[in-house]
Image (cartoon, rainbow, N blue to C red):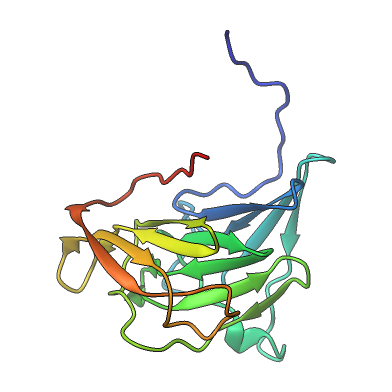
Length: 191
């Protein structure tokens, strides 16, 4: 069976190393990423583009201004980060930009209310990284590999399960390590 494109859609973000999630069998949210020609030394807030698969249209979500109450909850522009969705909330982890380098901060974007938050975390988070991936299995977020800038090392896979995040009790976090060093890869859940 030959596969072929059925429609070409213009107007979306032209990015690499972005992160995307799908929700409610209708929307694709694309977060940040890298685009040649953009100045990543200027710290802008992370942009969000939303694709509606029914209308085949992209919408750019407005980036908050400094006077907006959401401003401090929105991550700075980055690339090489991961995104995973649990109960219509996107969890954005890590990534880097050219001014601050890699980070290990977790942010949340509620796809229903279109609001950002920064959950309080406990324990020792994984090292700052970019080039990693994330997926969710049974309400648990798994983060795999990446590149740790501080020690210039490709990281081993990491599991995120019960304990360290102050987020709904149905979501749990514990950091574990796997034997393989990986970066700039794809993670796919097959059920």
